[in-house]
Length: 194
Image (tube, rainbow, N blue to C red; front, side, top):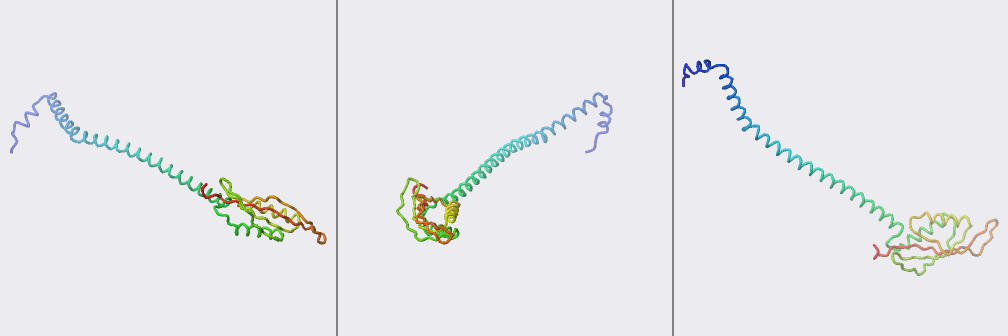
């Protein structure tokens, strides 16, 4: 369609105030269309994104808190397992008499003592543990006995050395040998207390 020749001239013939008004009206319509068409939808998307970001931040904080709690619990479990292992070395669940006697015999030999007899005796059951006593008879020098008792005290397993009786000193040259009777008591944990 061909433009009317007077249409261009009619706009040109308008006064400046009218042209400004038409320009202002045109800009208002275009600006309003922009605000309604683009800006409001973008603003709604931005608000939605901000709400989603807040939700995600809260979820992240909760996840970090849970992760810290899980790490704390994991460390606590590891600590308890290590403590349980240590307790089992000190107070095992079974009497383990062969290992107990091997330890005592090894320490006696390292100290230079001669073990003449090993006699298991009747134990007693307490509320949380059971006593497992063994009577030892040994012969050796006084400092060898002291070394033996010291080495027994350094074992991880709980062992009491009770009723120590020094008997029959024997003189051999410059050395004095002592016959010793001692009640070596170890312990085991009662199964019902675990």
